[in-house]
Amino acid sequence: MPIWICKTCGAHSALNDAPPPHCIICDDERQFVPEGGQAWIAREALISTHVNEWSELEPNLIAIGVSPAIGIGQRALLVLSPHGNVLWDCTPVLDGKTRDRILELGGIKAICPSHPHFYTGMVEWSEALGGVPILLPEADLAHVMRPSEHIQPWRGDRHEVLPGIVLHRLGSHFEGSSVLEWQAGAEGKGALLVGDTMQVVPARGWVSFMYSFPNLIPLPAREVRRIAGRVAEIRFDRIYGAWSDKLIASGAGESVARSAERYIRRLET
Ligand SMILES: [Zn+2]
Ligand SMILES: [Zn+2]
Image (cartoon, rainbow, N blue to C red; front, side, top):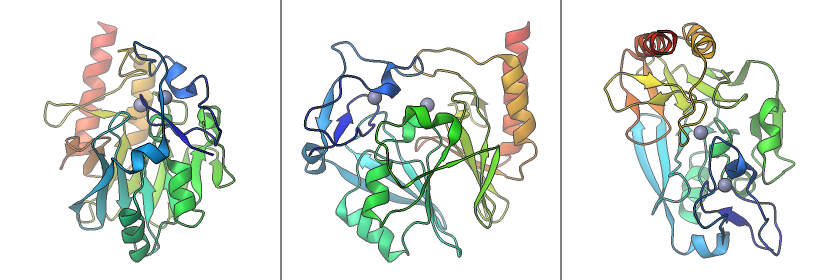
């Protein structure tokens, strides 16, 4: 039975002869169903036309994208550590070459998507790499399109995945929206992988916050204040955002603080 992939967000559906009528993720007001309606593509059709792209961002951090881009152009970040490797976020496609390269690096201990817009092919990745646990905040389980025995819900605001690699659930965009603290990143100063829990914006050294990015629905000031307070407790110097050009190379803690202050000032004046 085929896996159906949502053309708009890249989410995989449960195995079924026919595509499902709706995509839970795109029906939500934080995404959208495009003009022309919900469309699906069979995974088997994609795998012959799309490949993964692999690039090292810094020592022990590898970006894995899909070319040509599909869905919202998701990329995954593979964090290598002496205690095992962690996949942050995910992509709709995993090709055989990439699977083999990851296995040569020791495989993956956990798959940690930042939020439902990056769930994409997480179950396929898990199964292809030997049944890797998929760590999802309990708060977002209702957005899962393809259930799996490998999904391991976690509760609370903080979850240590491996020594030095910690999930922080900040909420906001989604109730379960998270960031990944990688303490060895940025030459030991710490890196934060943020997905779009906060969005790295084009002006250098700034981020922003939204409930819905495509539909431009902002977050309330109290939420942005709360997020900034949580982030201030994490030691890091660098931020990797959801896409390849989304980087704050240094001073990123200060970037979040001043960006939150600017956002709140706009909402409250
Ligand atoms: Zn979708
Ligand atoms: Zn999103």
